[in-house]
Length: 229
Image (cartoon, rainbow, N blue to C red; front, side, top):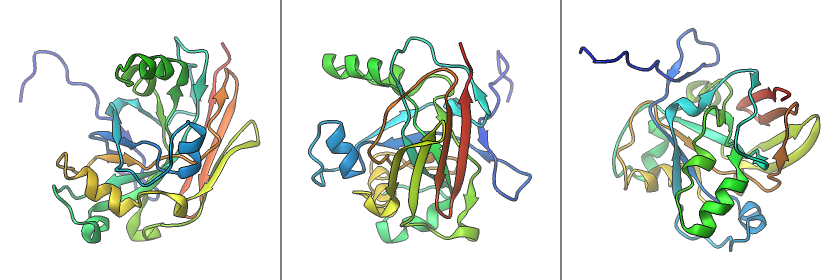
């Protein structure tokens, strides 16, 4: 295939223990999937149907040092388990969903909270608050063939060494298989899709110069620093 302009480079994530990388097709994010986070955001944590938003594939970054995002005075971290889809499908049954997973990683849904708050108030889309450049720092993917399918384990993020968010994967309102099954009713999932599975309570702002370190038991870690302005 010939193109009238050069196609963009393929977004990708390293795979633990492999030379080859995981190509990223789309990034789907489930909102308010931990009850304590739903409460801190002012919502009822009852088990309502899940909702999703997306980030562009090239929001993924594995850089150690990131430029601080523009147009925000309230940048928040949201630490999350990331599911990497290896086999596509539509209308996937929950009991079959894990067969579609290639592996797992730990990622951070960086959010321009002030922009999101204005968008919510005006009933507008969240795109500029969630899908900006380098808004998805992510660690290496651990293949499910090596680590299995984690359903419990501590997930945590520190900022400059101080714990900001901590929770357990077992606290998800919608489990990984349920989330995959639900999302596949609306879109055909495909190899290369990433699903960010929600964040526990404790989201808070970061500033230029801050160092963030996220971990998830049995999965891996992600670490990066925002460059001073």
